[in-house]
Length: 353
Image (spheres, rainbow, N blue to C red):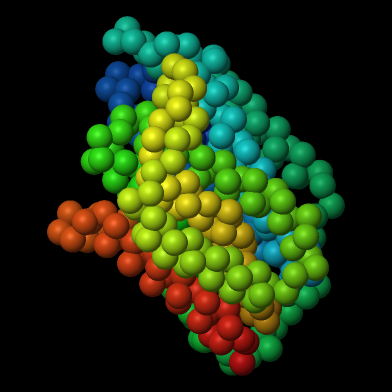
């Protein structure tokens, strides 16, 4: 849906696409709600879930270029995108807690009707957001989205810096997931509990939130290329350091699901978790550099970016296959290679020409 959504955004503008995305999301939740009373309700529920997924794709395709352009592009646009990512991460962490509080303990007797309060809230949020956006004076096309400076008026992939950026986001999405996911599996293979592995995975996600929140206050003062190069180099150094510290153990407080206990873990674990601080700024930085100078092709580029999110499913699979054959630690050659590519992209390949 990413590429069609980009074309739609180019045709009808930010405001209408955002309103359509919110209405589509509300309809999708409504279909899921109706599936509770429908015969053969599971296919109906899946149809509602698919509709909601299309809505989220539409909204993501809108929000990235809109925030970047509202911020004036460059460091200012990167700052707004990073701030948006902060709210996204915060809501992503808060929503499971809210759902758990509303639904309670899930048992064999739990049915879709027990989730109705959550669906009511989701429907209200989508439809209320659509109503508010309808009355906001948002421009349909921002002033600096005129014709592109280069590329002959063709699609976004005719711009080399955008083409390399699309590849970068594909690789980054998989790496940001694979670092913590592989660490989780490695700790379990060493005899640690799944709760311990899950704790470090959660810590990684939390550091991504902290990184986005912190850097959104300073990003406007730092050139985007510098930010991406430094964060990628930092992540590369952390991976190298982590792989050298596998025999060093450290007693750390770990939340195991029921209590906070001291557990001796390889120093590699907290070092790799710190990669979350580095990866927190990469999505917005890659996007900002990729759409620089695209003009009217920015909307289509955003659609390509959403399509390349599929890297989040492919790259971890590649890393997992390497881990099965050569070991978990050897598989970190994959994220190391990705960060090396992002350094190259930030310093050379991202320059618009």
